[in-house]
Each structure stands twice: as structure tokens, then as C-alpha cells.
Image (cartoon, rainbow, N blue to C red; front, side):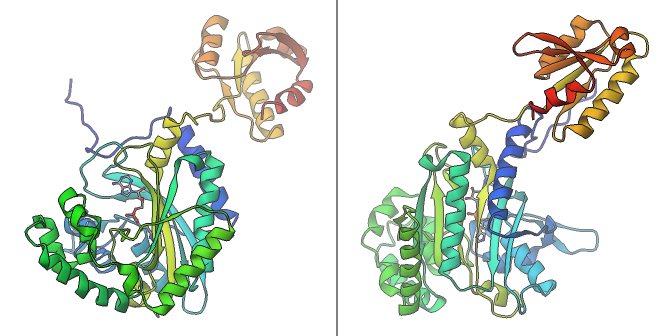
Length: 422
Ligand code: HAM
């Protein structure tokens, strides 16, 4: 036998047993976002490498060590998108979507990061992201958080996620803070690990979310970003907190929350769960008012977030919220001369007259026993049985596979009966 070929590490199939839960999640997400009037945008999965290095920042984990970058046949450096914001901004600028108008957009699809795979962390993973352009907030910042809170309620996971919030101020606020933070870090240089030392000058704010416990211990005494926020940033943040309070959304302000991508300013937030172990951030986002201009567009305020769909699926599984709609309602069983064609015709009529009904026809022959076994295997609620007699007098046997009862109905009456299944 030829050697089997395996999938790439950290890149998973979504198998037929798993896809109903994924579809349920995706549909719920789409319905919640649509309830706010947002529109879908679909971007390419591959973009020019410099889009990501410019947007996300040269000195970030994503750009430094996680991108899938390759040269294409004409020598361009291309990258599989590690996230959606950069491509969304590129598309909005290129298609003149944000010159005059505001935009409220969402997207869903695969992203790629060469991270060490573990539960909840993959090399190909899926995000649903929302991006808003042209609004300064904080009202829209609050709406995005309310939208996610509604989604958690709809999914039934709201008691298992908590919201962390911070303001990282404007570029100038951060420049002032940066100087003070570097000064502090220099005083503790002997405690910093190599990564922190390197970041101290290139991207010192990232030292704040180090996982190194020794460094964490000294950070309690570090200067606080909140002391360096300008009046406007403070007002913006207070405005957001008031709106969230009024909406009854609980949060904790985490002054160390800085996020791993460089484009943020002012509002940043993360939804975190304890039910997944180390990879507990299910959704993260914030404001990025400078990015459109930085990528060659007209200065435009912007805010957004993205959630990790694998992590949400894992949460639904962990919390046993895995009830999904049956993929087959009715299994069509036939036996005898001319019954196969009659069965396929009846199945077509049912699909037409009972929208949403899922009807599977039996193929491949076999006796009733074998056919009923298949019907059970695919999880059908009802088997319809057509023999030569039924075909002759336009009836059908309706076998309830859950209750075990059986009835013979006219083919006209069966429509009303099956409508109950949808
Ligand atoms: P991010 O925090 O890098 O933000 O990713 C958002 C979410 O994607 C994470 O909270 C997590 O749930 C999921 N995620 C990230 N990496 C992985 C992975 N390797 N495996 C599984 N799930 C993962 C962004 O990507 C920003 N673009 C969000 C944003 C949109 N900010 C403003 N607009």
C-alpha cells in the first residue's frame, strides 16, 4: 500500500460529526452580528507580506516568528493571513469604502500562525471578526462589546466568560509612558529575560504581558499607563465604562492588558474563559484609529474585534452545549418494482412542500432490515416506507423511529405530518 499522507501539524479537518456544531455556532454568530445591521466582507487569504509587517508591527510575535511567508512565482513575498484586520483595512482603502462613508463590517474564515500547537491553539484556525470604520466612539466601542455579550448569551456560555478592559491611550500618551517604562525596566535589567531585554527598547509595552513570573513580580512597581493618559483618552474610556455600566455588562479594568498587535490605541478588550486551560482568550479587540492612515488611506477612526471559533467550539463541547439540529429528519425506505423512482419523487415533493425538511433516500439496495438500520445510523426521526402496494394506492407507511409507532397515510396527508419535524 502507498504511504498515507497526513495533514500538516496544527491544521485540522472539520469532520462530518463535528460540522453540525460548527454550523450552529457560525449561524448564531452571523445572526447576532446581522441584528446590528453589519455587512459581510470577504478578503483573500493571501496578501503581500509587507501589509502584515506594517499593520501588525515588525516587533510582534506574529510578524517576528509566526507568519507563513513564501515567495510566489514572480518573486513577490506573500503571506497567509495571520489575522483579518490588516486585509480588511487594505480592502476598504483599495475599494474606496471609507472615504466619505462609515462602514460596519464582519468576516469569517481561516487564519494562519506558526505557533506551537496545543489545545485551543492551532496553526490554521478560524476567526470571526467585526470592524467599524469612521466612528470615534465610545458608543460604537460599547456596541461591539454588547454584541459579543449578546452572542455569549445566545450560545449559553455567558456565565463562563469575563471581560477585561483597558485604555492604552493615544500614540503621544504611550510615547511619554514608554520613556518612563524603559527607565524603570533599565533599573531591573538583571531580572529581565532575553525576550524582555530585547523588547525593552523595541516594544516595551509588550514586557507588561510577559509570562515570566520573576518579571511579573517587579511589574507591580512599574509606572502605570493610566497615569499617562491624556484628557481625551481618559474621557473616552470613562464614556465607554459608563455605557457598559448602563448596559449591565460587567468588566474588570486590567492595566496590564496591551494586546499582541501594534495597531491599537485607546480601548482594548479581551473576553477570557477559565474553562479551556492556557488558551483562554476567546475574543479580543480594540480601537485602531491610526491604521487606515498608516496603510495609505485617509485618517479614519476604527474599532473591531475577532473571536476564535475553535475556542468557542471547545467551550460548547466542554459545557456540553452540543445539541444540534438532526441532519436527517426522514429516511426513505423502498422495496419492490418501481418503488425507487416513486420514493425519489415523493422525497422531492416533500423537500418542496416542507421547507427545511431533511430527507435522505436509501440507495444501494438491501432488505427492510438493512434499510431501517441505515435510517437509525443517520439519526432520522421518521422512516417512510414505500412498497409496491403503497405506490399503487398512493399511500405511504410512516414509521416513527423514536416512538416506534407506525401509520399508513395518504401521500397528501404525509406532508402535514412531516411539517411537525421542522
Ligand atoms: P488576536 O487577539 O490576535 O486579535 O486574535 C483574536 C482571537 O483569535 C483570539 O482571542 C483567539 O480566540 C483566536 N486565536 C488567535 N490565535 C489563535 C490560534 N493560534 N489558534 C486558535 N485561535 C487563535 C486579532 O487577530 C485582531 N485582528 C482582532 C481585532 C479585530 N482587533 C481589531 N479588530
